[in-house]
Length: 183
Image (cartoon, helix red, strand yellow):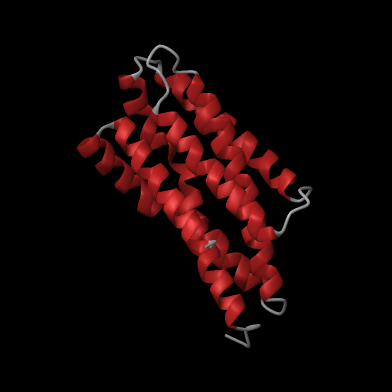
């Protein structure tokens, strides 16, 4: 495996991979489409547009993270908190204004994930200068593996606790995870 930079680098990589696992929820919007369309009596094709907003603002978040003049850890914290707050806000979208989900989950959630995603990879690469590809691979794999964990978990949560409570649970989970890494 080669020599790692130090124990701080390993800790950064582990925490980064866990956060990437949580942030990867951006890829499972399809699990929400039918429940959202039923709860909001909203055309599933319109519900699917949330993915377009999310991925567009994910890219904008990635670009913005490189321009923000804060420490990497503060940008990751900010991105994670924005994602958590976006889930919380989505839980409270009124039934007569379903398009607000484009803003709460799509725009803010995507932007928050983009901020954190880029900085986590940057920190991993910085701590493994001789194994940058390895460090990047771990973080990107964790982001992608999120679908394997969260798709069935979210389906189970929706079936057992309803849509609103699922967003509340996820928001709480992300909030606790993000804060625990930065306290």
